[in-house]
Length: 126
Image (cartoon, rainbow, N blue to C red; front, side):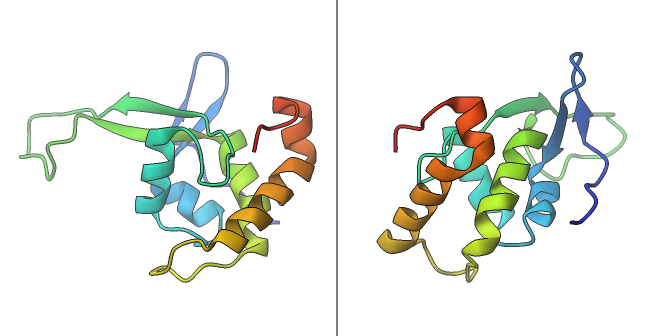
């Protein structure tokens, strides 16, 4: 099992949060950070896995012109990142393709039977 990178943010409760590029590395490149962004903004994956996401403001120093007009970055919790890592390696993705109906069904089944899901969220409605 690979070691996790240092978190981008740790909240007042001690919960670790990772930016989407870090989560992409944690899940082993099974999905891109753009795909993760779409899922995080919705708060749920296409197969019904709830994701803990938060918007964290970007710090602007004023010394340089920003490369983007975004005012925040999206962070995923360590729990969500680890759940994705546990579920996605069994379903390798090609970066340019979408999930098929069969792959979504397989991921729904894997999500239902994952021990962290049952203990944390109860029985998911997928």
